[in-house]
Amino acid sequence: MKKIVLFLFIALFSVDVYAQFEDPEIRKVEHSERSQFEQRFSDISWTGQGLYNPTTIDRIPTVELRSRLQAVFGDPTQKIGDLINERNFRPGKAVQFEYWFIIDEEMPLMILDLDGPFENGLVYVGASRYIDMMPQVKRMLNRMLMNESEELEAFSDYFYSPERDQWYLVEYQDGEFVHEAIDRPGNFN
Picture 1 (cartoon, rainbow, N blue to C red):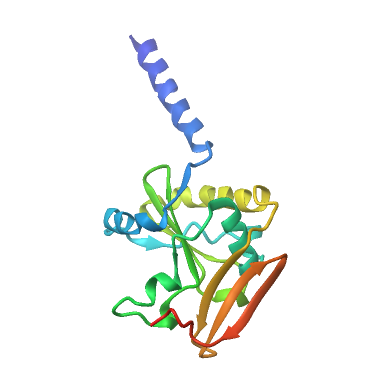
Picture 2: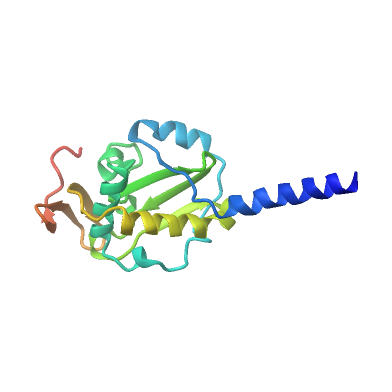
């Protein structure tokens, strides 16, 4: 009987150890799924802890990361244009783009561009109860963005800089990155 219990204990422990080294399943939340995501994770305590360890993606220009995200995951979950007509919208508080994810069907993660096209890296936030998983998730994202997105993908976004009180059209088209100062986009009320 003791041998059976010991065998079961070792078998269960081995499964847990193996699971820690499996790549997490990363699913992007589509634009149409935003409200379900917000409802499901409304009680989450968000944190960046566990995501601070620098990787290659923290040193690359944000516009290049946006293009790499486009290549791997497609369109962002949310852009500034999705928020501008909201009741309490303030352009200085909005981000150029946001990618929302669900990791292993349980952990929410957001990748945000808070500083627009003029900086390097992005901001990563996840649920505080999954801090132990976050370094592994960030390493996986780094691998996906640096290895799986050999080709940069075209995109077009808007960004508002409160420091400059200026709107920008931010694009990657025909092999060139552009951030052009513009008037407030006409389709933004």
